[in-house]
Length: 125
Image (cartoon, rainbow, N blue to C red):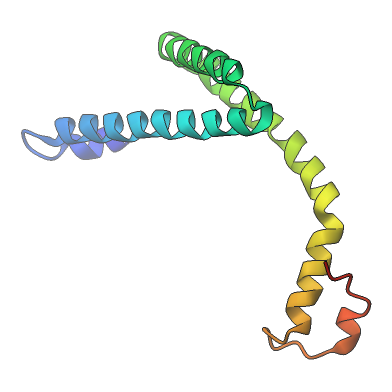
């Protein structure tokens, strides 16, 4: 549908769309590469792990460009689904801290909430 819309622009519509796709795809690849590299540095604190990550990232980018579209989308959905695991674990581990910070925020009257029962026994750090 997007391609049909851009083809209505005389002479340059398809070139504008091609440039936009290239710009968004390349910046997304670079952004996720940097984000992943920083996560690997934080988690493993070893430069060897970063080198391995870089190799795997380049390999996955190459395979993604060469693979079938349905396979790439299926793998992408699977990988995004795996991100649920560390996020749920983090939510469960940080639950008490989030509740305590929320109560402290309400206690400092930064919101319109003035109910003292809402903030009983706040464990301050």
